[in-house]
Length: 128
View 1 (cartoon, one colour):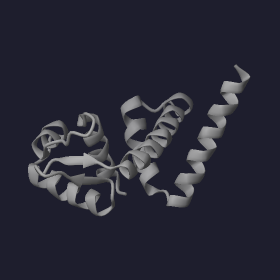
View 2 (cartoon, rainbow, N blue to C red; view 1 turned 120 degrees about the vertical axis):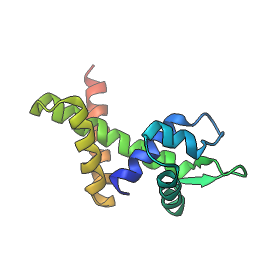
View 3 (cartoon, rainbow, N blue to C red; view 1 turned 60 degrees about the horizontal axis):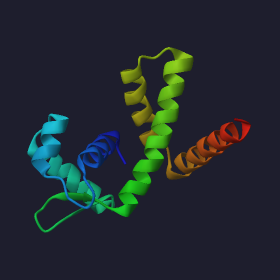
């Protein structure tokens, strides 16, 4: 997934309410892009299995989309926090860079890193 596609997926998830789909126009307004850009991104996300279109042509997240987004968000949060805290990178820059880094990784690396982050969080919880 590209970083642009991930940003679309994040926006779709933020606009989604339950099983109700999101209109392309709402996504375009939120992201400050054209409806054509949203349409093309939605097509790519649909081909990847992250979203589907409902009978009213609204975009609906799939279970696979939510699962993948959860992994990306875990990595983005962890990377962004480390960039901000340890490297002094401003929060908005750290977030944007974390998205780029997460999208640049292979599926294998992304999976390995998410498992590492989960194990570290589990260790912290057991020490508390």
